[in-house]
Image (cartoon, rainbow, N blue to C red; front, side, top):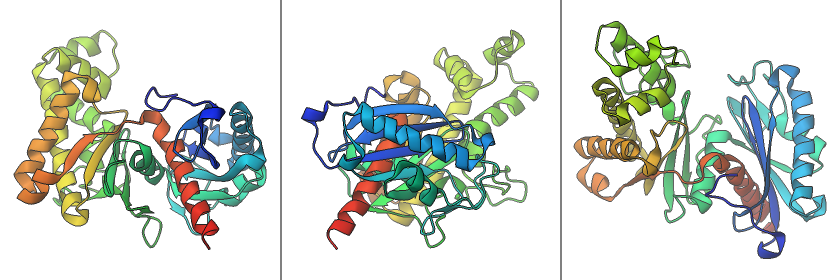
Length: 346
């Protein structure tokens, strides 16, 4: 459990209760959340996606039931379950289409099957949208009417929340913020999705590793070379460590990444005009608790200041997300809460 979302005892919680499920390629996080967005319990199980979707969803159903017991509740106390899943997907139909991180799950009716295995109604959302809603509901975005979340990791996920509305799009492909175009050249970098010039191709963890390796192979001096020669693996974390002790190349990579993100964020600001843009995921270079993370954020702000309309650059809040890995299940529970309230109000 993240220190930013500690569990609360049932007698200190407020009903009704919801369960959030955050499905990932390697693990599934499940938690019971009260009406104020406070977790009562939380557990994680391996996805074991190679065993097939039905077996995985059956175990997810058991995990939902276990989390309810851990919270001191029964199934009758739960109003609804929310499921956040990686795409691509058809949200209204409750089906996965061709999820990159879940090979062999194409076309699987995941919402209906999870409902079957846990015995509760299920709301379905993109995992980026779920994490964004968690931050909007009880995280760093809670003071704003609208926000964008960018999750920086192997790729760049995203979520856009306006009011209580997640921008899912006509074809369930909305808020694919990592795939906005920042370079239209024919030789632009290739994105993980197979298209060129996307933000993800320049500012994801995969991109940081690729850009660093290319620069080293071109002969640039760096303390990274000695670390790699000694057997270290090239990762954004290693780049951050060397940047933190003053390696010029590593600092340059971090600053470049910030500037690319500033370009993409400016496009989102000019399109959506959100109250805040938050950065989450595993690659925030230490976030607000490190000097390097604060430098990273300051460089993003500077790039936005150079590119955005002055009024927007002045008023936008750019910050780090605060819920950490719990954002997904908390937000999925929050999306379930929205649907429960809509149905209750007729």
